[in-house]
Image (cartoon, rainbow, N blue to C red; front, side, top):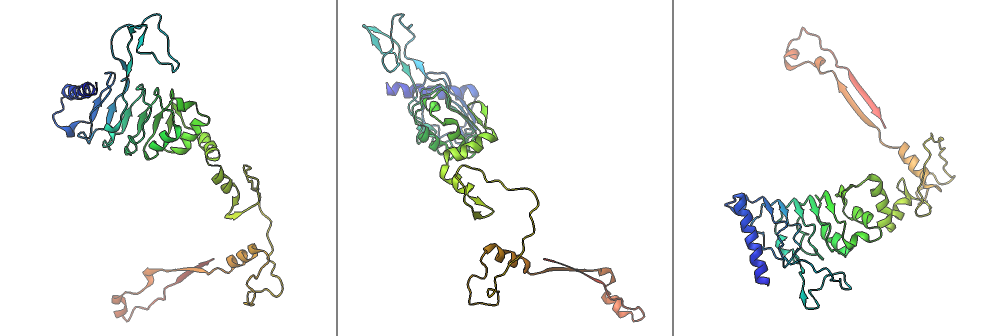
Length: 307
């Protein structure tokens, strides 16, 4: 059975190459292998410039016999191969995606409707992928699936609906937080509000740390509460230097009780920057200096100073 499946896969690839008229492997940019009931596909590493690949709708029945009217599903929801001695068709599906490991130029990959149960180790090298459709499969491990896709920094469109993992609590926010490049998830645009909600939900510790920092200094606040600052003008703060703690007294390591006073004093004592310019048209040239009858004019210098 495995040999027959491999042969069917090779024949499907050869058929598409013949239909498209490709004579060299380097010319293959598009490959359509959808809806052919394939269980195994040969390695596509020869087509190293392949960019668009359709492998969707490859779950099919082994035989063309009709389903019996009185058949029942088993406890797993699948049709048994044989009921009361009457053979019934079963699904054949793709189980291994290792044939995609070296197709680094892929930008669009369609794997929907294939009854896939695992994609670990098969897609992590496809860093150029922009569109990935994985809906209507049997992917159950949300963490493992998202981990496989984290290296796709160019991924813009992703479909994972109609998979068991899509029913996990917080599924959409988790995917948005883990894959920040995705702009269209399950046929719905990712909004700015969803990105803002995903950060505190999926990274509670870092969110609490960020909320407790204001203007580079930690403040006492309850995690999860926003820190608001008045937009009105601040009253002028008077610099108070405690007696005996002036800057001239180097024996005291803490010259101010309030560190903010030290910062203010340092800002007031910053070095002055100066820019000067002159009118070069009034500066005599070497030729003018040789003419003694022409009076020399002293150029005017304009100086600007600011702190």
